[in-house]
Length: 58
Image (cartoon, rainbow, N blue to C red; front, side):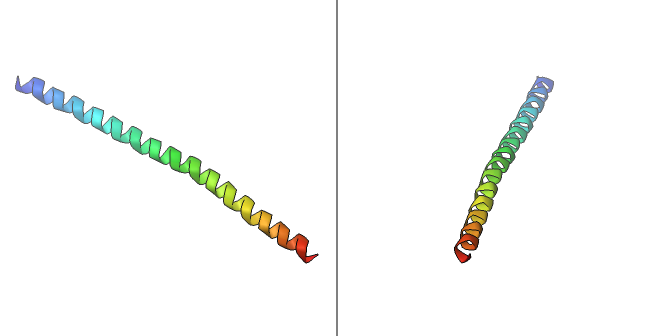
């Protein structure tokens, strides 16, 4: 009985670790995805305004 309980808790621990790892991976993946989009958007905006200012100067 005691051994079964211990085995069960070990199983729960592994499951929790797996869920935590998956959650962390998901958060990192989504963050990278949105960071890439935000980075590209910011770069495009900056380059766009830079080109506009250069064109208006000439």
